Structure formats: C-alpha cells, structure tokens
Image (cartoon, rainbow, N blue to C red):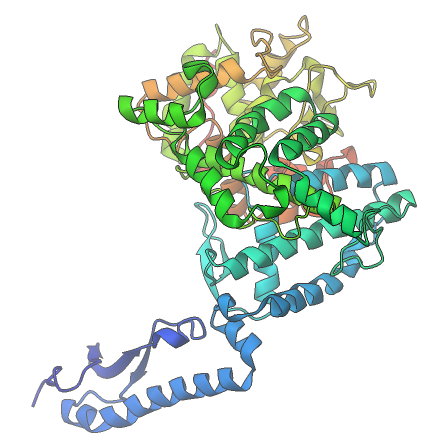
Length: 583
C-alpha cells in the first residue's frame, strides 16, 4: 500500500516523505490558541504505520483542546472572558474593576518630572494630550483606543499580531468585538481615566485642587456644587431642553475656542439635534436611540448644505439630494459630528445638572474609520513624482521643495508652507528646520500655527535633501521673509490651502488617481521609513511631531539634535533619492 485513503483518515497529509495529521482549532478556543490548526507528525514514512498511529495522535490533539477548556474554567468568568476575547460576557462592575486596577498602576505617570521640562511646558503638554483625547486625529491612532488595547493586553486578553503600515514591524492587538456595548463602556471608562490622569497631574503642577470628582478615578476630587441634588434641582433638570443645551454648550465652546471653530464643527450638528428631537425635548430624557436618529439624519444629509440649499431643513435637503442622485455626506464627516455630539454629552455629564449620567452618544462614534486607507508613496512612485516635479525646481521652486521637505521630514503641508527663511537653522553644525510658532527673538509669530504642542520641534535635515541643493535654495531667499513667498494665506489663515489643491490636481495629472495617495502620504511614508530603519518609537514621534500621552519624554530642543540627526541619517526610503540639481 503506497497511499492512505484520505476519506477514511481526515486531516492526514504528507510533508516531504513523512505523514502528519492536523485538526482545526474549535471556534470557542480560537482566541486562546494562537494557531488556526494544530499539526502533529505521525513519525513515519510508511502509510500502513501512519494509519495505525493516526487515532493516537488525533487523541493527543483533542487532549490539548480539553486542557485549554479546563484552564479557562479554572480561571473564573472574568479571566475566561478576557482570554477568549468575549468582553460582552463581563458586567459593568467587572469592567469598572478592570479599568480601576489599570488606573492605579499608572500612578507613577501622574508624577511630573522636572529633569528636562518646567511646569509651564508640562501644562502645555497636558493640554495637548487632553485635546488629542477629546478630539483624536482620524489619521493617527486614537489615544483612548490605544490605551484600551494596552489595558486589555496587560489583563491577559487574547491577541493577534498586526502589521504596522507598510513596514515589517508587527504589534500585538487584542482580539475583541468593538461593536459591543461593553467595549463602548470600556472605552468610556478609559477616556475618563486618561482625563482624570491629566486633571490630577495639572493639580500637582499648579498647586491647586481643581480636578473634578470621579467616583472611580478621583474620589477625592472637587464635587459639583449641585450635588447632593435637591428635589427642586432634579425637577429643574427635567425641564432643561435641547435648545438650552445647544445654547449653553455653544457659549462654552466659543469661550474655550472661538466662534468660527464652533460654527464650523457644531452648527450643523446643533441643527440636526433640534430638528430630530425638537427644541423642547428634555435633555435628561435623551437615550441612545435618540442619538441614533440624529446620526441617521446626518447619514443622508448632503455636504455643504447651507451653500447649496439655502435655508431649507436637513430633512428637505436629504430629499432633494436623493431625488437628484447627489452624494451624501462622507462617513468620516458624520463620524466627526458624532464625536462632537459625544463631546456635548460628556460636557453635560461633567456639569452635573443636566440629568446626563451616562453619555447616550457613547459607542455611536465608532472608530471614525475613513472611507479611504491612506498609505505612503513607494520608492518607484516617489521617483515618478519627483521626475515630474523637476520641471518646477528653478522657475517655481515651491512646487519642488515643499514635497521634498515633506518626504524627508514627515512634516505636514501646513508646517512647511508657513516656514520663514529664519526657520532654517544650524545647530552644532547640523542643518535643521525649526518648526515653531515663535521667532528667533522668542515672540510668537502672528500668522504661524501648529496642530499640537508636540508639533513644536527641531528637525535635522536629511543628507539627501542637502545634497539636492536645499541650502542653496534657502540662501537665494535671503531677501524674503517667507521661505515660500508665492504662497498666500487662505481664508482660514493657513498657507497650505491653495498648494494642497494644486498638488491634488498635479498628482492626478501624472496618473496617481487613487484616493489612497495624497500629500499627507509623504507623512505616512516618513513614519514607515522610521519603522524600516528600526528607529525607536519615541525618537520617530519626536521627528514627526506625533505627540505621546502624559509624561513621556519630549524631544525637540537643541540639546537633542545630535540624537535626532543620527536617527535621520538611518532613513534611506528604500533607495529613493531626490534628483540632484543640474549644473
């Protein structure tokens, strides 16, 4: 007999000349056993002997499955739920205990270190961290979700490895259903914990006791003056309406930021809230299902509604859109509005006098997954881009050097387009870009702005951009205040507006029509290059201005330039180099 009847012996196969048996891991153990199937050698090349050994080796595999189930049963319901990735099996109290234990372990992170930073700088960084928690960048990892991932992994949740970007680097991520209400509750608690971290750290830095009370994370905090709640207050809460919420939150938002920002991010949302629920609807009575109705209206609303449809209602605009076959608002835009709706209810909950005890919009924001997955340019694509950009090097140098700087610094378009000639500096013989809102005299420059506090940094220039003639270009700009004087400020004050529109037309004109490639792809590519060069996460964050949560070390001052310069020189962009200037 030279072969085995595979119909009678399922799972048997031959590798080389040796026979093996394999069996798929049952679904209830998939989150515990990292392999999708278990294979065991039958230890023979003889088909007849393989048939004899088959039931014994198959029993060994089944025994392994039984041991895994016994281990889970012995661990208790909480650990079993974690190890199997079944967060939905946990109660609210279980999740509160889980997050509370994680929060207590983070006590050391709330102790500010003054080895390199003064109190004012620490406070600025805390404000930056708070901004990222409340309004995460959709192009970067959500800090709350990132912290929740670490919490679950540390607690023993089943994990899978995931490739980071286009690099070879892989990271562990928990295997969990992110659509469940329990995961939404976990995210809510982690967000509260991180904000409590910041509030307590801020108190330690400025010597006050202003951090608000939180029964889980700051029981010693300042209680709302409205608690304990009198019966008259409770009745008043029931009378506070959606119109009141829109008015009061709008005032708060304008005082904290400005009217332009508040109108841009909330005006349409306020309309949707009042149109869906009614201006007289009691805030205390708003449920998750009501927030779903708000989202459903936004899902069918066309973009730029005021400009395109005048003063008609959102419902009327949605009907016109459907009749004319026009596109609806992008899913990411709807996600941003739902994130802002959640921020409104978080604010109302913190106030303590609106009757909001659990955010009804929590969990409806999702992860704000974009419709398009951006990526970095590959080496061959960069060659094609700069071969086409070469024509502008002498006559319209802005069109060549802005993308070139983006490739080799990872800087955002806005950071590059607003550069002044004095922002190209030399530190201990290293040519650098000083990405800052402040001038050489320390005064704030009125028309410069950065996205976050961590964006303030000094970035050494890569040897390739120097070899391509960038310093000579800078020297020719000595009569200009701005490095790229042909760029004018847009309506919102940013110098990158028109350039970004031009670059979009340019890249489509040379064949890059796919939505995954945009100007921001240079920044994605820079981060991928850092990973490929095995530059540690802290240094790559410093180079690119990606902020880190809480008291992580911050680079960017002149003393750290040698460290950053050594890291920058490791980047090779898979062999791509800028074309050299022709003589």
